[in-house]
Image (cartoon, rainbow, N blue to C red; front, side, top):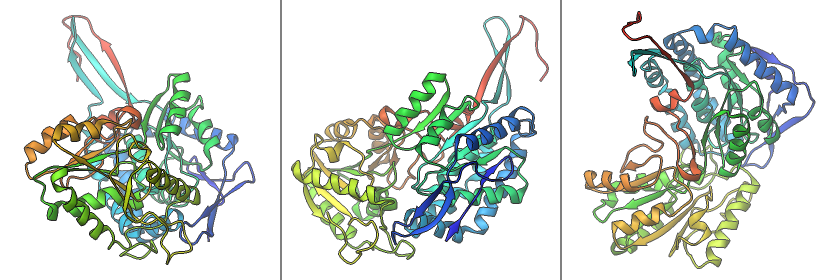
Length: 484
């Protein structure tokens, strides 16, 4: 049993103001495996106050990026030293296959130095030519950040909020998802171990209501939210009422366009992995696969053959590819979409039910729909489960039209032997990021985020870091050259 009885506020463990606890249930065993306290408004007030103190009177904003980065590297190394434990804890709390969560967690922890280099490349002070004379442009920390993360990759999601916030000098209050709050505590443990200054990082778990309270808190200057489009709309409304800086990374319904010249032997591992990673519970998954009509039968056969061989089962087993969904409600949601697809005329060519050999755990078989039309719910709405939809197209123009005919615009992929042509097609897709063949999902180190209902703003890369900085222009008299 994993138990945590306190919050991490102002550099130390803080007893909760209330008595409620949040039970964490294993998606594999359906049993309670741990608990954490539930935050009240008083707890969140204390966390925001600590962050404001670190911003206004603490040392953190005065440090250089490299000095801040040294702390963050130590935190990353602390987490890497217990990577096995951290990964199995995430498997326990939200059911991610160990093979996937260990790869992504380890990978993201090794990217910290790259993030430090990117942040250090952004000038704190810059002299530009103005209309009449020189203009000094300052980049200053935007203020206290509220980081709100989903359950599907707890440590990675926390890093995407904490690292840019801290590198740019912004103290943060992190609220993990109620389904997966346990692994976030490892970051607090690491913060204590490396002597992170008080108030710079604060951890306060709780449910939706306390998340809304944090978003609307007058002591918070910026919100970085990752979650569903419906929840993101509420966050945007709250931030809009206060004219508050926000980044929203929301849902997706990404398309993979398989071109006529694609080498299936080469692309199949990437195509399958990117469509079903984390049992389908990744917002940037390419869950719509578009294939030329002339190669439709060939690709269907390959997908059915190879996906049917994926191991579904215990997510702790290193050879498992598909584990359980995070919650019973999530399985019911996915099964509802499968039923809808059948009712609207799509054809299941693989899966569609629950694995008969797994009576315990919230499992759904990897499922492939063929003969899908873009008017169907399964084509338009985010399912967030191991369900892939196949579309046939006659020419590339039609493929791009199908790919863009959605309310979302988060990710995408183009599979082709002609890379230059692939770039041309990717440029026509209305999406925040896109890969060619084996390129990494999620922007590849460039800015990551979505258009349309997939979100606002960008994370990662220089553009993502700059969203944590406020610009100030100081206009000077003509003929005056300021000191560097």
